[in-house]
Image (cartoon, rainbow, N blue to C red; front, side, top):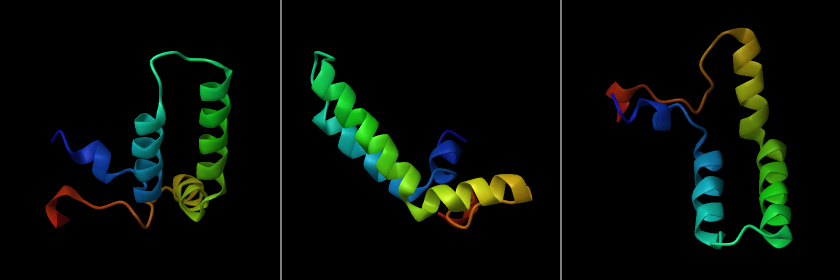
Length: 71
Protein backbone atom coordinates (compact mmCIF):
# COMPACT_ATOMS: atom_id res chain seq x y z
CA UNK A 1 0.00 0.00 0.00
CA UNK A 2 1.05 3.61 0.25
CA UNK A 3 3.22 3.10 3.34
CA UNK A 4 5.31 0.25 1.86
CA UNK A 5 8.10 2.48 0.43
CA UNK A 6 8.57 4.13 3.82
CA UNK A 7 8.77 0.79 5.61
CA UNK A 8 11.50 -0.30 3.20
CA UNK A 9 13.62 2.77 3.98
CA UNK A 10 16.41 2.86 6.53
CA UNK A 11 15.12 4.48 9.73
CA UNK A 12 18.30 6.53 10.04
CA UNK A 13 18.00 7.77 6.45
CA UNK A 14 14.36 8.72 7.02
CA UNK A 15 15.32 10.61 10.19
CA UNK A 16 18.11 12.43 8.34
CA UNK A 17 15.76 13.36 5.47
CA UNK A 18 13.17 14.76 7.87
CA UNK A 19 15.85 16.75 9.66
CA UNK A 20 17.21 18.14 6.41
CA UNK A 21 13.74 19.17 5.21
CA UNK A 22 13.25 21.05 8.46
CA UNK A 23 16.45 23.04 7.89
CA UNK A 24 15.87 23.95 4.24
CA UNK A 25 15.17 27.54 3.34
CA UNK A 26 13.10 28.88 0.44
CA UNK A 27 16.25 29.99 -1.37
CA UNK A 28 18.74 27.37 -2.53
CA UNK A 29 22.12 28.98 -1.96
CA UNK A 30 25.65 27.69 -1.43
CA UNK A 31 25.05 27.15 2.30
CA UNK A 32 22.01 24.96 1.62
CA UNK A 33 23.91 22.99 -1.01
CA UNK A 34 26.84 22.46 1.37
CA UNK A 35 24.47 21.38 4.16
CA UNK A 36 22.77 18.91 1.83
CA UNK A 37 26.10 17.45 0.67
CA UNK A 38 27.21 17.02 4.29
CA UNK A 39 23.91 15.32 5.22
CA UNK A 40 24.22 12.91 2.29
CA UNK A 41 27.82 12.08 3.22
CA UNK A 42 26.72 11.40 6.81
CA UNK A 43 24.04 9.00 5.54
CA UNK A 44 26.57 7.09 3.44
CA UNK A 45 28.83 6.70 6.48
CA UNK A 46 26.01 5.24 8.62
CA UNK A 47 25.97 1.44 9.07
CA UNK A 48 22.50 1.31 7.48
CA UNK A 49 24.02 2.34 4.15
CA UNK A 50 26.44 -0.59 4.20
CA UNK A 51 23.63 -2.94 5.17
CA UNK A 52 21.53 -1.65 2.28
CA UNK A 53 24.33 -2.20 -0.25
CA UNK A 54 25.13 -5.65 1.16
CA UNK A 55 21.46 -6.62 1.05
CA UNK A 56 21.13 -5.40 -2.54
CA UNK A 57 24.02 -7.52 -3.77
CA UNK A 58 22.90 -10.51 -1.70
CA UNK A 59 19.39 -10.12 -3.17
CA UNK A 60 17.79 -10.05 0.28
CA UNK A 61 15.89 -7.42 2.23
CA UNK A 62 18.01 -5.24 4.52
CA UNK A 63 17.81 -5.98 8.23
CA UNK A 64 15.95 -2.73 8.88
CA UNK A 65 13.20 -3.32 6.27
CA UNK A 66 9.84 -4.09 7.83
CA UNK A 67 7.02 -5.85 5.99
CA UNK A 68 3.76 -3.88 6.09
CA UNK A 69 2.10 -6.70 8.08
CA UNK A 70 4.60 -6.21 10.95
CA UNK A 71 3.52 -2.62 11.60
